Image 1 (tube, rainbow, N blue to C red):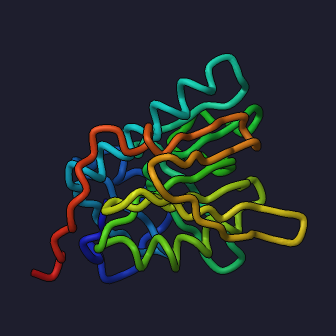
Image 2: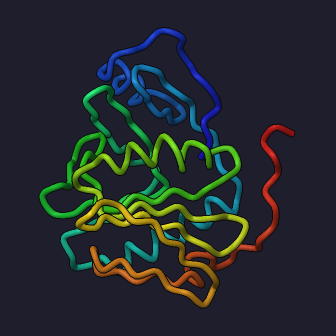
Length: 198
C-alpha cells in the first residue's frame, strides 16, 4: 500500500488517531503525531500479499502463532515516538497476541514493495520494525520479479540476505514455515510497475 501524504498539519495524539481510525472509511498510518492515508495497491501487490498470507496461515494451523492481513495495525514504540503501520502480512505468537485494535509484538512482518512505498519500506519502516524486541524476521517482497529480501535477527543483530528465483524457497524456522517462491508468486504476471509520478 502506498502513502498519499499528510492528512493533518498539526500533530494529533495516539488516542485521537485510534478513535478516528475506528470510524475512518480508509486506513491511515501514524508517524510521530501525523497521519498518512493509505491508497490501494495494484492487482499484483494484492495477489502477492494474499498468497503470502494464505501460505503462512495454512502452515500455522495448530500452532500458537497466527497470520494477520493488512487490516491489522502494528504499533512501534520508540523512545522518541509512537508509530502505527499496516503491514501487508504479520505474524503474532502465543502471549503476544492482542485482541484489541493493534498488535505490538509481531514475530514476522511482511511488506510487498512498490515504487511508491519502497523508500519507506526499506528506510523508515525497516528501522522501526527492527527496533521491536519481538521481531524475528522482516520480509520485503518484490513485485516485478521473484525475490524476497530477508532481515533476520541473529545473536549479533539483524542480517540481510536475498532469496530469489521461482525455484527457491524461503525458510522461516522461527515459526516453522517454509515459503516456496512459486507459491508466493502464484498467478502473478511479472511486468514493470507504472511510475507513480507519471
